[in-house]
Image (cartoon, rainbow over all chains, first blue to last red):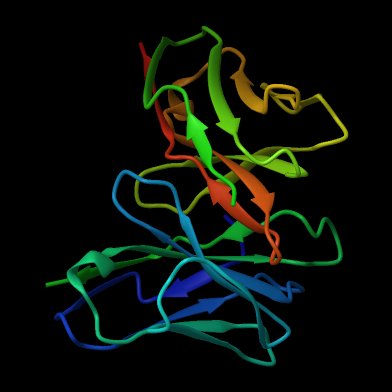
Length: 114
Length: 112
């Protein structure tokens, strides 16, 4: 098990609503990346936060936004939910004093939009 | 941008046999490659990685081979066990945030 935790584990929302997902990074890691994994697909990069600043973004609209806090935990916010937002949302932390390349994934939050 | 493709969406092997999962990538500037294993209901789990200045790396029962000439990556699992049944993803690091681009995954099934 990695030290990355995510909450909640499952969530059901209605189209048009807003959702906030949370991630606690592994101890000592200062970088958090968020990925969306649709059923049967590989994870797709949403964005990355490094020391509380957005450090890069994938091909996702602005209604996907995030935050990173001083303790390096992070939130992913999605506004105006659409049916296609139904997916497993993964966060990964990296950047510890050991190998800075490895990204350690949490168990994910399963979001269902109805 | 980067694109990553896996050659086979599914692979079935007999317990005890060796497994080989293949992956192709598009960006010759990619410098870091990782294999992940994902079991049902869990996040991807790191298996092994390789940097672009290497062509082979071995771990416990796993070997990753990198052929930069043809932009091909493979994962070999020796003496495959039932616990190896999972979806395997290759991921390639690129971009300004050094983000990972994943392939679509190969479902490995180990037959008794």
